Length: 249
Image 1 (cartoon, rainbow, N blue to C red):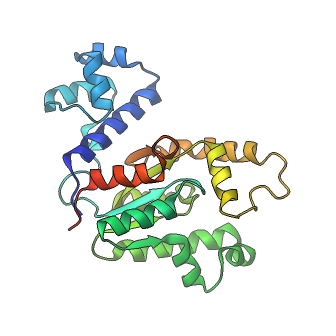
Image 2: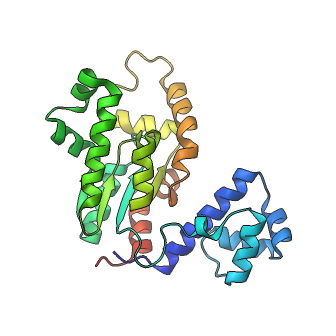
């Protein structure tokens, strides 16, 4: 799977923006200290700017960000697999299947593999062994899937970022894409699919979901790329990823 220059710039811009926000700095302040124009920094963070190594180093120095961190997993020889991450209702299964079909690569839904490995449903797994058993099975499946050769699109479980070894493995072996959405969107999409579990017996389900998402946001934000499914829509996300990835093979 080849990755276009556009995707590389998009990932670099996302990482620079997230680091700036993490430090609580303004674009104007960073631009001034790095010796670049505010307009140029806006373009760079938006994945639309090209930059020399020296000027990029100046921006990274201002953000106290090592170039090694900025380029982690990028370039030739990098991971061939894309891993979609995000809360339930983010659209991972739908987007993953559509993207894989468009790129003509396998689509792998990790939770389905977990059920196949365990020989029981997810609810059965949690009933028998709780989250501990699920985490063990999830990690085993990820190790097996990522050991396979060739490109693929993966849809991961919503809580995979909460498992340190599994999240680290995904970051090292795949290009991670966070499918971001507002808490209300997550809830509405799940219910629209006929899954009423998030609201049954939970009078304040939206607040609970908001708290979970708030706790996981910093972990999801560590993904290589973030796409807002609310603004782009399902088709828009698929088109954006297909354009960024380019032709498979």
